Image (cartoon, rainbow, N blue to C red; front, side, top):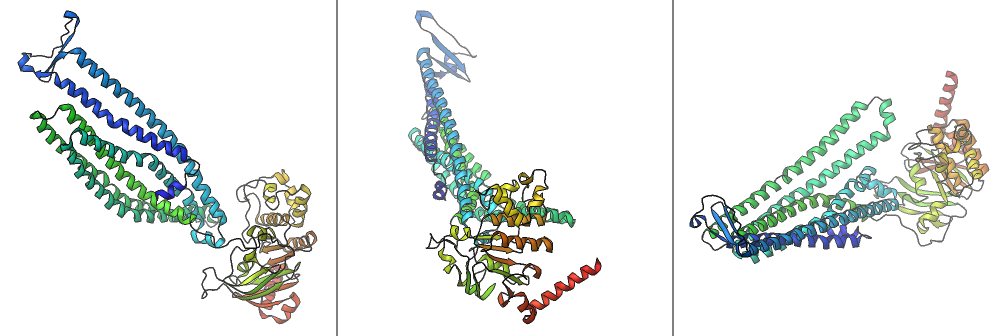
Amino acid sequence: MIRKLLKGAKGYEVQSIFTVILVLCETALEVVLPIFMSNILNVMQLYAVDAEQAGLTAALTVFDFRGGTHGLLIYTAGTLVLGNADILLNTVYSYGILMVISAICSLTFGGLAGWLCAVAGAGFSKNMRAKLFDKIQSFSFANVDKFSTASLVTRSTTDVNNAQNSFMMIIRTVIRAPAMLIFSTVMAFVTEPKMAWLFLGAIPALGLVMFLISARVHPLFRSMLKKYDKMNADVQEDLVAIRVVKAFVREDYEEQKYRESTENVRKAQMKAEKLMILMNPLSSLIMYSTIIGLLIIGGKDIAVGSMQGGTLTAMMNYCTQILSSVMMICFIAVQLVLSRASIDRIYEVLDTESNIHDGSQTDKTVDSGSIDFCDVDFSYSDNADNLTLEKINLHIASGESVGIVGGTGDGKSSLVQLIPRFYDVFNGKVLVDGVDVRDYSLFNLREGVSMVLQKNVLFSGTIRENLLWGNPEATDEEIQAACRAACAHDFITSFPNGYETDLGQGGVNVSGGQKQRLCIARALLKKPKIMILDDSTSAVDTATDAQIRRGLKELSADMTTIIIAQRLSSVQDCDKIVILDDGKINAVGTHEELLKTNSIYQEIYRSQQKGTAEEGGDD
């Protein structure tokens, strides 16, 4: 896990390394402070005599300036401290100054380490999000389907934040706690080996507690993050479909569904927290038991005169540092367990290879736009027993217009998505200009194909900015020509700001039919050899639909056009029409031929003619 985290620090290695060095310096200075304090106390104890022998009954300070020297008498808690003040004060001043210098240096090193750690952590987060975004951009539709949009959003936000926290802990706290443990243990053995052996019993006990709890908590956190995905999916779905929710007055249902999702997250968190909260009391029990043992042994040694008070004070400080370090390691372990689940989810995305790669003929471009389907089988699940398309054989000549009709779920959209390789075939091959699409580079293949998807998508920004997705270098004349062909120019110029009209997120400021026409114009600006319209005129009236088709022919007569439509009027003028039935080609022919020979086409035609007649009668 640590190796995976450190991969994300590229470009911030200097900050990370200096953070580690400064943390080690800070820790070393903190460890020497108890020694300085111990020396001060031990020197003072050397000047102590029993108060009863001095005959003093009250606290007394006496300064004697006779003979140019000044002496010191201090009676405190039954002890008389007396002796040469110069020796005592020099000792206190010397070690006191060292303590102040050490504390200031430690504070400085700690502050610099914190700043560098923050810089490295922010850089790590930036790198990980960039890696995830780049990887997602390389995914095929199948890869995105595998993870789901909501899960990818969670992994790019919440999981990256968890990973960032872990990285910052690793280069700072994870270094500091073991270093403090090692340095303090060494100093404890140097100071008083007999008492230091107590720590060696407490450390394994704390380690065992840490291991047992961490092993149980990790799978619980993984389960919790999956519930986070579900909660985010509910939020995303509700926001995307907010108009539908309000139209059907389903706010209460959506609120209840979201409450259930958040309750599931809460329960998963509580289940993990019930184990985590055991960490502190168990660690505290071990820590304070060790301190009590230390006081018992040290008190006896001081009573018999084999140990000085300053030494016991130093050992108490080292005990606190050692056991606090172990407790911190336990806390870090729990946090890393949580982060490990997030890191695994991040690298599950990063380690996933797209199942669609560039082909060997990287210089090949789409020149004419002919298309051939040769014994094509296709399955979303890559399962021969669950084929969406089966034994598809179809030739589309360059410049030809082809209509595709069929019932819902018959594979119309699946068929055309094989052309730009949004998905790859299960068996057989798809040829463009006589070359297998798997041999093209993805860029060159998709540059030659424009596709208006079934779900129309516009981006935040102006109409012009959205249209320029088709061709960033397009001139105003080219933009207007494409919009006229798509019957979009008139409604665009009716807006006060014309082509500079802001669309809002997802194109919320335009109607469904207007959105479809803008998407068609955007695709036309690409000047493709192959144009695919996947039910992209369903929201416009039949007259506008016919006008759009005429515009397509006038703008690019040599462009191969594939039109998927529910209305036969949208495809009846095509050079040929393909009928799909349950993932297989049922028939291919012109409108007139199919109307005479094909029962499926006849049924569709009659039902649509009947509907048209009824609408006319109602009028």
